[in-house]
Image: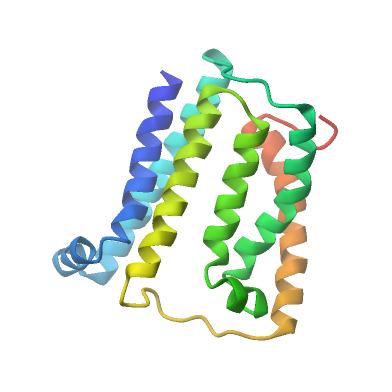
Length: 194
């Protein structure tokens, strides 16, 4: 049952995020619901999908665990080390500086790195479905960005090296919070000392 809930959550979460890439249907939804209504519905569906993903994955981990392959222990250490740059990339998409200018889409780069690292360090079916789906979506979204003519959301001002330093500092704090609090408390898997 957990895997089905996980898959339903992924369908909702990634489905609504895919709608963003489909500019015609997105424009039609905004015309029908209004900008505010669209954003509210988008947020509600995203959070519902995210809640189902977390709930389904936790149920799967507790009752349905299925090993597909056994990753080497070194992969966990590599994932722990490279998650810091992944988090910094996601932060740099909001605190824009030279990192943003060089990568253009640091959010997607960070999400892809996060997904690949988790695929390399987890060999169970639920993890493969979860992280493989997110990786596939991120690759699709990056390809769709190259084909879009409109910029999408309003631009966020781009700073310089100062913003990069702030993004790195905030990224380190977020990384520590994810490693020491979120992962063991919400996911149920300690990443430090494991």
